[in-house]
Image (cartoon, rainbow, N blue to C red; front, side, top):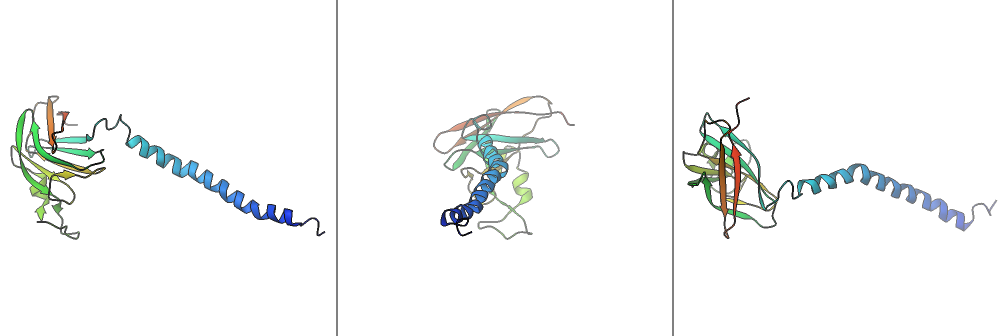
Length: 180
């Protein structure tokens, strides 16, 4: 009987739970971690963001004469916006920072009301940075520009050009869509 439970067999019995644990970890990675890693790779693909600054989405708000443009910094360094052009006309910088929301703890810097950031004056651009009061989009971060421009010509294409510190510039074509 003692030969059945020899030292060699005891080592094998002790290894079985470790082997089962290793297999469970590999299966878990395949089902949970694998898709997460693939999603992260896809979100960083050149097809999604072929340049450092990308336009994620935009929206014409005809009622209040504004366009909002959500931007993503796919680079490794912060991008500070120096100028914004719309159809070749330079817009003036207005409010930059995080909208003041009394339901959350206030951020450092002067409080700016959400209405002031979201509704720029005609010919101005405002920026929701979700924090800093400088027009900087941190690496891997998103910010929204609000442009004091509009068009009532459905289907008309417009050029949004953003110049960043250091001389880089990015141009995007945005189109006024029909109301659905």
